[in-house]
Image (cartoon, rainbow, N blue to C red):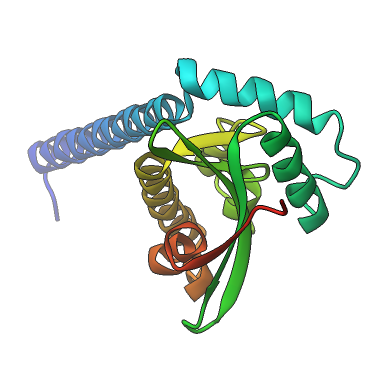
Length: 200
């Protein structure tokens, strides 16, 4: 049978362990919050408009007002390309296709400006929507602009960040990450082989 001295020591030790555990949980939470802010800041920097992107955005807004189709439809994208070309931009509708299982295809717009290739996507956030997202993951999607204008290397970084975030979100929700949510599959939409249509 424990004497009073042992009972007091046991209580003190257990109390200390609880305090240490609570502090560790708080530290982990602070680290996660800090990591999330860094990720959001990285996305904001990648989505930020420089002078060139701002000019393209102005032309896209002008073109959008004259396009009648739904923003996510193929007809909208082709009409938008036509309008952008009328406004002097070397724009094209890019159709990518891949045979990796599961096979798939995707459409996006690009524009060649001053020797650089810009990728324009009118529904980029939709490509990263997942079932039962964590609150942190949903906050990342809120950072996405309605229209994305990125250089290729910028979009590559965005895809990498979001695929890592998908993996983390699904793991926290104890969900399996399906093949079409993995990095290799997602990047094939924009960085694999494609056919470019200008509709001239």
